[in-house]
Image (cartoon, rainbow, N blue to C red):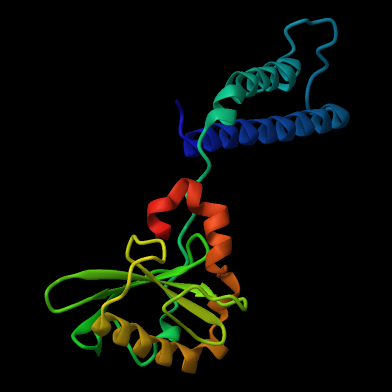
Length: 207
């Protein structure tokens, strides 16, 4: 099966051919009006007539043949948004937060949340989803606009160890100081809404 990029390429080639075809037909008709082209009346093999119909019909046939593949082609990949590091200032990649936990990664908005990854001195990794606080936060800690949900696979039933909780709370203090000027908040969803929209396809990433 052709990729969507290949299909678009074929369509572009066909469209370009039709544009060139129309231009050549226009030039030929103008030349006939000025007498620059000899009259070819009575001939069935007129090259202008062949150029104005044959290639166009071929392009149309090819488009019809490609129609099923166009319908089945996967949608283009979504380009991820850049990470909103302005939310964590002055913290940067690798910065220590608290109790040996440091910032290991930060993603841009995806499925309604940004994912902050913390890592401790033993190499343990913990994901924290930064969701929008719409008045009913579900996270371990939250700010006026954001809800910090620890993803430990427990669906909210598992407790959080003290040193990790303190580290997430420290992140929340930083976020609270920056959230007022961060436009990324508008691209986020409340955690409950994310579960409703995305849990069927990405359940393991929402727990």
